[in-house]
Amino acid sequence: MKNLLLIGCALLTTCVISGEVEAAEPGWSPVIVATGDYRQQLEKTPIASRPYRPFHFYGNTVRRMHYRGTPLPAPRDLITTGLFPLMARTR
Image 1 (tube, rainbow, N blue to C red):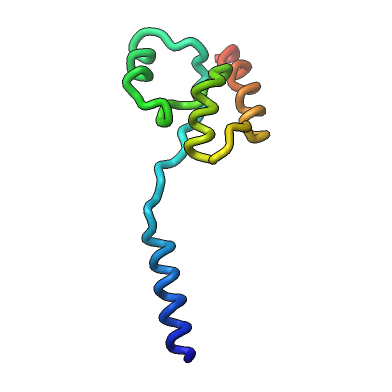
Image 2 (cartoon, rainbow, N blue to C red; image 1 turned 90 degrees about the vertical axis):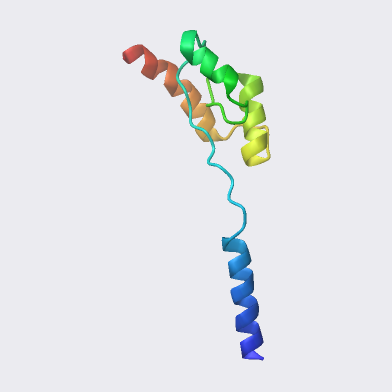
């Protein structure tokens, strides 16, 4: 009986570990209005793979639904959105 339990646990662990791994969630970009080459690059990238950007409500919501399963921003998103414009001004 113990052997069957160990085999079952081993199979379950193998299935969980070898399951399909999704791509990592994209990071944040401080660029609010993309221009030039960066804009062209963004337009060629699928919306779920683009970086989050401040004030881009539709695209950010689509990415949150894709990666997290919820359209609501997490507290870290609100903090990051507030900090990026400040960081961009100091550069």
